[in-house]
Image (cartoon, rainbow, N blue to C red; front, side, top):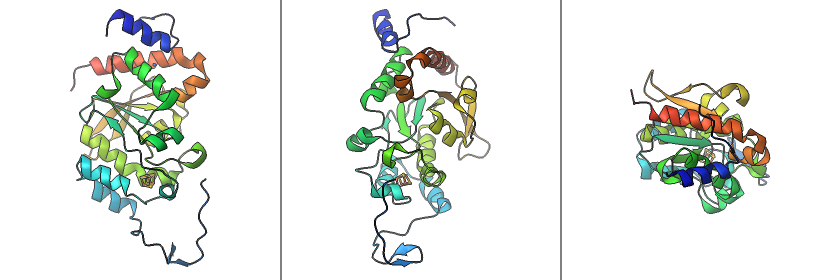
Length: 247
Ligand code: SF4
C-alpha cells in the first residue's frame, strides 16, 4: 500500500495522527415425541460430540455443505441462508465476528454493510485486503433481533468454526467484539480486559493453540467513534504479530 492509500485508510478510521508506536418465535409444535414434533421430517439433531467428531475430517466443500444443511439449533428456522465465511483459505489472519445480521443473512457473506466497510478500512490500514484474510463468525445463522448467541447456540456451532480454523491454520486470529472474543476464548472477561494481550485458542491437536488478539467490533466503532484510536492501537499490534516470523 502506498502512502496515499494508507492515509485514505486512516482517514476512513478517523485516525488523524499516525502514532508510532486497532427470538424468532418458535412455530407452534402441537405434537411432541421424545422432544421432537412427530411431523418433523428433518434429521435428528446430533449431539455436540457427534458433530465434533463428524466435522474434524471434513474438507472445505463438505464442511460448507454440512453448515448449509445444519439444523443443530433453532436458528436454522429463521435464516434466509447460512453465512459460512469468506476469504483466503490459506490466510495468515482469521477474523472472527459474532453472527450474521440482516444484511449478511440476505447476502450470505459476513461483514457487509457499513460495519463491513469499516472492517475493510481497518484491514487496509494495516496493508491487508479483504481477500487476503478469512472472515467468519461464531454463529453461521442469524439470531433474531441481533440477539447475543446463547451458550447452546454457540456450542452447537463451535465445531464448524473449529474446523474452519483448523483447515486454515492461520498465524493469528483477530476476535472482533466482546461476544466473539468471549465465545472464542470461552471466558466471560469484559472486552476491556481482553484487549492488549495475546490469548490462545486451543486447536484440535492436543496441546496446540493459535494466538488470538481482541479488538472492538466495527459496528461498535461506528456507534462509538471515540474508540477508534484504541482500535488503531489494536491494529498496529496485529500488524506487528503478523510480521513476526512463524515459529
Ligand atoms: S447457528 Fe450454527 S449450529 Fe445453529 S443451525 Fe446455524 S449452522 Fe447450525
